[in-house]
Length: 242
Ligand SMILES: [Zn+2]
Image (cartoon, rainbow, N blue to C red):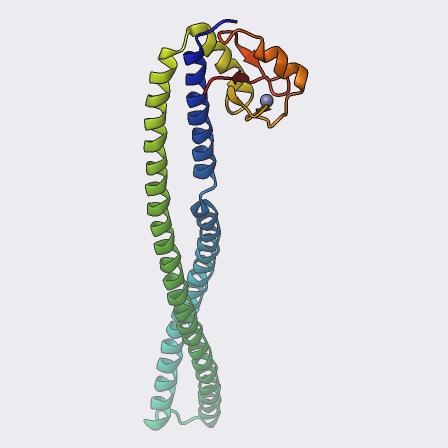
């Protein structure tokens, strides 16, 4: 293939842009924020699960408390009634008096047991609410860190995108100056590797680093400048002029 040496030189500049684009895309994918965000998101999920557990323990204990308090109210009322009946001397039959006294003793035991359950439930509610407050604060802190990281990730991403946009415009302008046949060949090579052209410098291909042997160098030196030469190793277009 023949091509104006000046157009071949343009391929070097296009290669340079393609390399920059590849580096920028790699940088964008590898931003440290991605990994930090993934770690924080995991923490957030864990905290959220713990919040669910704490809330369910609170509601269980509240249900127990409600049942115990209802029971307690009824038991206390019955105790008051029985005590009243004894105090008012309404019972004359010794067996009824004994039965009422026994029931009073039983009701007092029952009240003591219910009061223990009431305290236990209240303690659970208090402990779990404190734990929930702590979990909520931790989650808020994690989410605030995530928001900051998202802002910084998006800002860097936008910055990279703008640079990519500028490079794309520049590349299109340059590519328009290269003959169709040559840019088509370049694009085909660039599809297989990062850049489709490299410079022949001090006997080496700057694309793959291969040192050309003496006979190849002689052959290239005897080739017309307009002839498009390719690296035998990497296949890139070897640009001789600089
Ligand atoms: Zn090469």
